[in-house]
Image: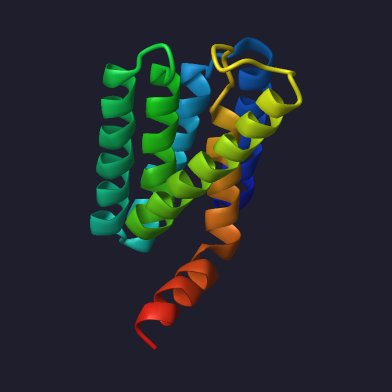
Length: 151
């Protein structure tokens, strides 16, 4: 829990910047990456952290390559850093929650005619929200979900 507050503080700053400029600054992502490395080393969670990084970075890189106007490379780096910090299970859950929350907000904005389907919507804040939810509620969410299928 030593790194939780700095992790959340940097995610908050990234969210505000992304909302204003549609950009995620590399220096802030480097800070998150560094926090993830420190956490991994101190907790000895090498396998989970590296799997989280590789899975989220790889998946978001694929999205970026397939839809470069829809997913920026800043989102790719941010997702990888979140995966490194949270580990595989919580990282994947946080990405899922980011897509769900981003999709819901996007639909509401289109229905309210605040945005069109062609307007950009910064994804960094949704990645941050997914990370926040995964960090604080992720284990309970996963236990509930898997408990439905494997009681």
